[in-house]
Length: 251
Ligand code: NDP
Ligand code: 8X3
Image (cartoon, rainbow, N blue to C red; front, side):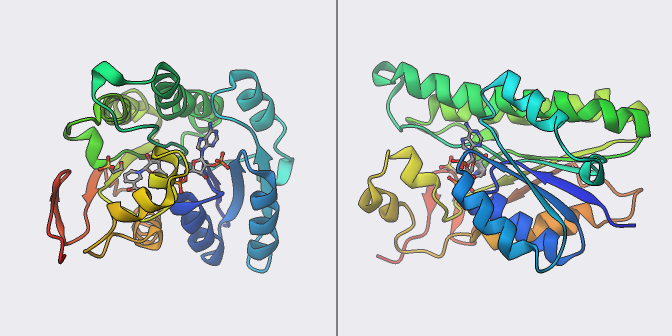
């Protein structure tokens, strides 16, 4: 039977690539994000392969999250796979210089947003005693690096919530797992550096970073395992990266 996947942060990077690969592999897709123009363009592209529904909302907005998810039409309403991907880093400053709005953004989006979306979808998974949740963490959820402070804290929270969800949802047969990427070239660094594209490009200079499709491919692998297999926690790095701040650059 065709499964339905809801992907947050589908307008760019890892989420977009995940929606693309799942659409080509016969999943019905619910695309979520704030940038409606991009959702519409992607919906058109993916409609060549599958049925697509779009939801435009900010994961920080509790009311909008629940209203959007409750508005999903019947044909898409049984969500088999939830990809909790929406998130970003905002700023890269020592803690003493950190910007309060950046801190709010990271905690509200990466942690609370993930919780709101999960809270809106988990009840139907419990009712059906089936479902699969993939939380996109980060190497920043496994280690801390200088100036990464609040972003690292937010991704450590994702790591904790991933483990907690797996425990609490265990009685209901719901699979929960996290994927923790290292450096992936997306719009991530442009967002972190507030549109400074030169600074963003420097992050990926001198080595081959992961491409969003690399992570999307792995997500597809994870969700297509037989039901008795749950890939619980996976760290994926570019070959050039050994730890958050150890990168072999050829420059
Ligand atoms: P991108 O910036 O390319 O994509 C981020 C996505 O998140 C966009 O689709 C954006 O959509 C969505 N998003 C951001 N804020 C909100 C919000 N408030 N409400 C709803 N959606 C939101 O980055 P990536 O693809 O790299 O990031 C995806 C995930 O991967 C994030 O959780 C990130 O932390 C994680 N990650 C990334 C790594 C990297 O090196 N790139 C490494 C490890 C983890 P829109 O703006 O349209 O709302
Ligand atoms: C994104 C990777 O190393 O910038 O989560 O934190 S890193």
